[in-house]
Amino acid sequence: MDPYEYANNLYNQYEQEANDYAQQYGVDPNTSHNGEWDAFRHAYVSGEMTRDYGETAANFFGELNEIRGDYLHDQPSQERMPQEKLSLSLF
Image (cartoon, rainbow, N blue to C red):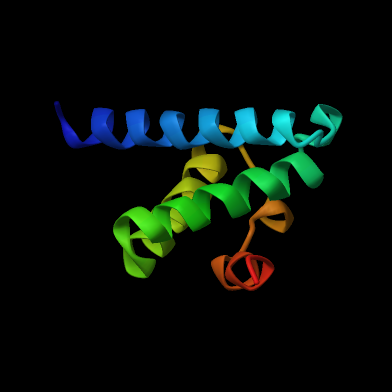
């Protein structure tokens, strides 16, 4: 498996888990764009990646995900979630 495919599969796995838990805990799916659902997904994935791979890898993949959003989805810069803020939201 090439590195891009591996990273994409990993992203999809964590995203699906986060979406499943968000639904289980009653987070409103209408808030999936910059709302509670989106925040839950970011926090969940960051926490799980930190636990599974360590803080450095989790921060790296978090930044990579934001860059992915910038280029693949034309994410406006004001929507970019700095990893420092995300890390603080976990505590």
